[in-house]
Image 1 (tube, one colour):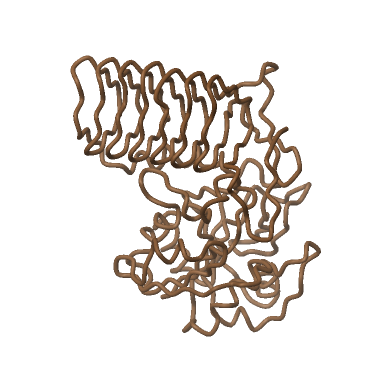
Image 2: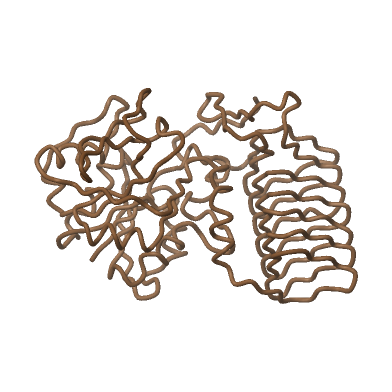
Length: 392
């Protein structure tokens, strides 16, 4: 069995985190999104064909020619004209039936296995906001139609973008959609017009369209971590509940940590700081005196040495949070937080959301960051794309 992973896009909606790396290489709990998917594919497929494009060299360097027992093959999409054209690039390499999935969503092995067993199939899941996705019109366990982002969805079942299909799916001819792209779902619509496509309902699926979607996967991934406390914990430090501490890390006296919290390798935490539940701190970070972090993801190599508050935020790698920095996470009117995406103000549907900070950002002393603001490093750019520094 082969799998095709789509990983060519620039991840515009995931900015500013995707300004310096492909979205599938976003790291959480010391592992990238695409590596989580490869772990789930281990034992189910022999070869993974990765469609690469934006910053392709980073994916090749990270994954190599073999991942565990899986042979890795890379095909460049130099045009990036949509999921349909990207997926079809794999056609000459396909033997028969294959899996197709996104490189930046989270899937579970049991669901992938079920999709293989029921091939040809599509993996779906109920979602509270189906109008944001392709909605499945279902009939007796088979897909009758896929309706993209309908105002009046026929069901709550949405397309997870994971399929098991015969390679003959590419015998159909599709045209560009109204938005100017070749959509893989157009292949699916043609297929189900002539043949049957089984529906497999997923037990777990988290799409990561936007940076704040990562918060939804944290509890699931935390439960998969080995509950261990390594490194050195000084007398006077307080760790309550599930607090994972990796090797080489020092927890200094006066640090107060309320689990669930994950702290990676070779970090220095404290003295006299407050780490609240839901926080993930990656490797080689420094959190110092009078710093409070609540329900946030802190990228590797980031320093917050003293006197700062970070709430419900995603901080990129190698950032420096200066003294007096406050990343506020709640609007004064207590409405859901809005933020700019591709020049449009959108509702994140989150009551609490701080900042999304890209890699290599340094804040000045006494910086106040309002809820939903995104911050780039000035040198971060996307090829062929004007990066809008978000001030909303």
